[in-house]
Image 1 (cartoon, one colour):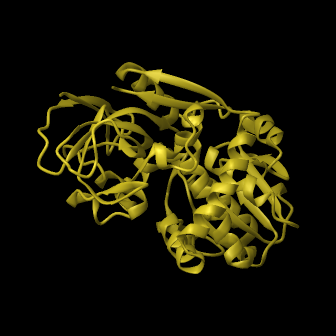
Image 2 (tube, rainbow, N blue to C red; image 1 turned 90 degrees about the vertical axis):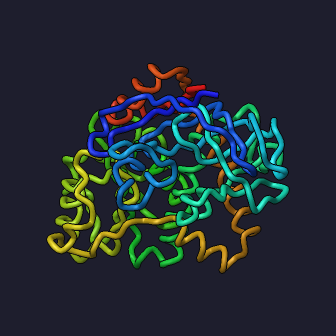
Length: 359
């Protein structure tokens, strides 16, 4: 078996290469053939904050190179484990590659965890693999929507819940940058269902009409109109990662900015990170880390209730996206390289969703 991996330069995200390798399974391991995975601006975020939050550690590569994680589907192609049989189809977290070797453990009727030693320091949510025939949200005809949108929706669900759990930090306005990104759209869709809340989407002039047409933002304004937001206080949900935009929002609101969190990095080449926070007026920006709020709500509600709320909200969101989302599929290494460049340069049409395969 030959595994093909798509790798990205950790110091130069525009630099890519294909690496072929061959592995022998050890006792207890399985080999999964990755049949398709989603590629969104969120994957660019994984790369840009990979050093800070450890995303490069999931799928180690040669020094200076990284395997960008992606959500998708795979089939168990070979097994030396008594726990997982050949032919099982699973959903989870993969490298952009044709295959992945896993060490399954903590098996339940719903799936298993990868117990590979190098992955254990990372959050459990990323090491979980779900059998498609036991997944309550899986539909064979909507696999593209699941891998493209569900991880981003999950982030949006947790962002919305974090804000609500803190009584909206004492404000009735939420400002979302990179408002055309799918994680921002998911968050805005949920926030829009809350009463007496003003959701403002910041976007490029070229995406202004698209963002306005979605209906989940009360207002859509371009980045050069930040001075016209017209609120005394706000939360800043930073999906862009742009230090320039962050500074403009902080300067506009000062102490009226009740909370500022960095969620994404679509403007990866402008990312300054919270390290320069002491130079900003208003609150210190914080990195948003979904597992922290997930752990809190699991303790508050129990995992079954958290899953029930998530599944109900996901079903509504997924059906709503049919009105504006078009799926594009890409096959082969050349197509993958072109797709990565498209995402990296921020040139993807926000009304499209992209999936890829290398196997």
